[in-house]
Each structure stands twice: as structure tokens, then as C-alpha cells.
Length: 155
Image 1 (cartoon, one colour):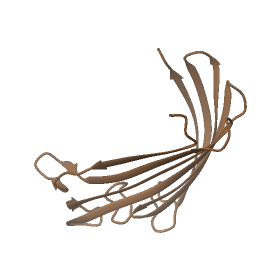
Image 2: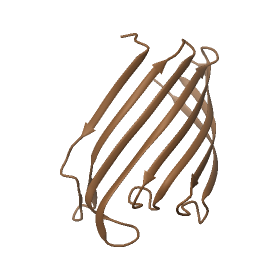
Image 3: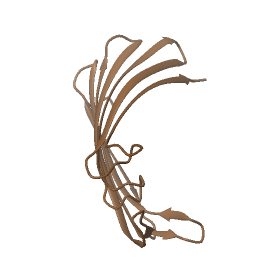
């Protein structure tokens, strides 16, 4: 329905453990996505999730319980039918480093534009800043700046 606010819940329940024979993590995941449309042009999205498993190989050594969780916030503004802007801010905690290889709280901010020059084609340039105050996951640094250009073709 055309409601202003929608909520999507996603739960995956398994036997949450790392399968050493297959080198595969079976983890439980609990997620929620909240979307609120303030106007026809302005939309907010919150995407949050938590996951965990046992017997995980920990980058610092040994095996044990691992969990991670995060919250990503999006503000999307449709300038026209063909151009929109997105601001994203995220916090992600990888307490043992199992998910990313480096433990700590990651914060991230991104700004991007989506341009639809013709039907079926979307061009999306963006710039992003990442930070981890606990470890140095970005080639020995706590900070990382990236720029991207995506080209999406739909058929």
C-alpha cells in the first residue's frame, strides 16, 4: 500500500556456528528496515541488523563467539524524475573482527547522486569516508576516502 511508513523484518535462524569442515559461517541474523516518505521528494530509510555465531575463527587468534551489528541511515531527495541525491551515515560494530578482519566500531558517511539519462540506465557517482577508532583496517590507517562510479543497466 501507499503508506508513508513501512517496516520490514527479516530473521534467519540456524544452528549458529562456524562449520570448519566447509569453512562456512552459519549465523543467526535479525534485521529491520524502516522507510518513511516525508514528501514525494524526501524519503528516510533506517536499515539495522544484528548477527552472531559460535566457534568462529577470531582474527586475534583462537575460536569463540562472534557478533556484529549496525545501523545505516539514508536520506534520499528526488530533485527531478531523473536526478536524486542520497546521504548515508552508518555505524557498524565488529566486536571480534570476524566479519571485517579488524575489530572495532566503523563509522561511515557517503554522498551520492543517481542520474537516469534514459530508461533502464542509472549512473551513480559517490564519495565516501570511513573511520575505525579501534584498529587500523585501511592499509594501516584508521581513515579511508573512496570515490566510486556505478553504472546500472536494467533490462
